[in-house]
Image 1 (cartoon, rainbow, N blue to C red):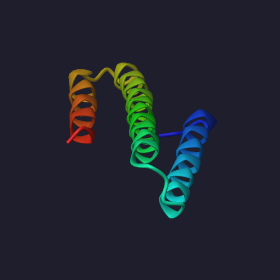
Image 2 (cartoon, helix red, strand yellow):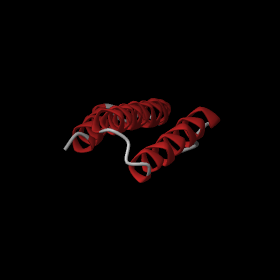
Image 3 (spheres, rainbow, N blue to C red):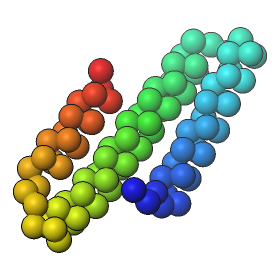
Length: 87
């Protein structure tokens, strides 16, 4: 699969958030600030996972349709990836 710059940029932002969280811990910041930052990271990762899965599903469906294959397996695989990411 080909990943676009949007996904890479999202991950770079998440990387910055992780560095910020480490700084908060090193500076002994209050729990609320740390948890808020970690929650934002989790949310950003979840959105990035969804974007990667949706882009992959889109490409798989296009390929399956072009090659005359059934598309239900691609959809099932995408759903399984999303479910797995939430465990």
